[in-house]
Amino acid sequence: MTDLPPEGGKTLGRRTLAGSIWMLFARLVVRGSDFIVLLVLARLLRPEDFGLVTIAMAIVTILDVVTDLPLTTPLVRLDKVEDRHFNTAFTLGLLRGTVLFAIVALLAYPVAAFYDDPRLAPLLLVLGIGPAVRAMMSPKMSAFFKSLLFRQAFIMDVGGKSLGVVAAITFGLLTQSYWALAVSPLVTRVSAVSLSYWLAPYRPRLSLSEFRYFWAFLGWMFPAQFTVAIGWQFDRLFLGTFIPTATLGLYGVAANLTGIVEQSVRTSVNAPLVSSFVIAGKDRDRLRRGYTLADTAILTMGLLAYLLTAVFAEPFVALAFSSEWQAAAPFLQLLAIAMMPALVRIPFRALAMAAGRTDLVFFVAALALAIRVPAIAFGFAFAGIEGVIAGIGFGNLANAVIAMVFVRTLTGMSAAAQLRSMLRPVVATLVGAGIGWTILRLIVPSEGLALFGGLLFGTLAVSLAYLGTVFLLWRLAGSPAGIEKKAIGLVADRLRRR
Image (cartoon, rainbow, N blue to C red; front, side):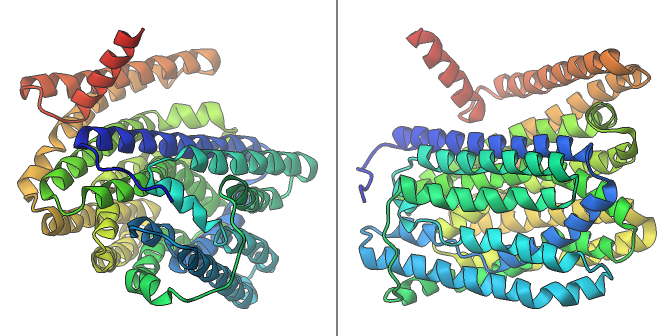
């Protein structure tokens, strides 16, 4: 592996930004492809079909996350990686995939009996293959991550997803069966793993010689992953026992749409930030600057996406889906608002993993779960599905506050300093919401092209108002270092080159 030479913070920041852009672009392409599949299959399948797959996917996702081993991070943290480290990583991935599929196979028929739907058993078995295969990705992909090179990861993710999209749409058009929803993740993951061996050639060998090193890092990750998985999928499994499958399908589609932003950002920035924080080492000043920049950038762009979703959920659903999906619009609107706090402190996980403090990842996840689960249950008891969404929002807010406490432990950054970094995008969200709701009242009665034109105008107006407010507040604050200055610098560099 080629290690990075000692470089200044500016070069490191640019490499981190470039890596994050590659990964974010990959996630946006992947999630955009999911959206295209959703639009096509929503016109071929019924809400009941989506509800059925929502239950199966929730169970597989929990098991996937619980058993997940972030084997790349221990490799990135090593100064020198040898074949025995790669072989141990591969063997652990193989064991993890085997255990995962065995658990899915054991649970398939009991779960089908619990929900009184025999279709769930074969569906779970097929959906369980994808995560099991993904665990066997070439461990030498970590060499690219170590050097902050993520173009290869982009090729792997986008290439695999492209084949998955083609398979899902083709299967859906030919069969109009809920199985089309299961085909996409299966083909995607098998294809991505195959591409990883083409991009980072590796001859698999079984070995556990470095097990102690990996376990010292991963020991806390098992309970952490378990609590995270239960927390993020609890609402769907909980609702699946109380509401009709068709209603669960509407809710599941809305949850998938709102999850695109948070999941895309979280999964795309984690690897570049871990590498960047590892390189920064114990220099707390660099850690604080890098963490603040990443956190502010994520919050600024993520809040805009959720703001547009919350304001224009109704016309968006009317244009994108058939009339039987219109009832999903209120769920989409409320979930977008509830997910806004989840954008806060996304870089915390990367910071803790880079420092080797995976115990803090577990503590944050455990405290968040202890708040989120009862909040969802009480919310449903008092206000039905809307109460569940309120519980999700409360849980996300609590998670952000808890993470702030541990960020101070790792970087020495006070809560006041962390809150100040969030001020500009939060104020801009309030300004954009006021303008957006005004425009919404004007365009809702429209239909067809008029509604599309109104939605396009509203999106542009709210985006300009939001970004304009962010930059105005930045100038009034004296143009401090931050994402705004980085953005202006990138634009200026591009103009000078031209």
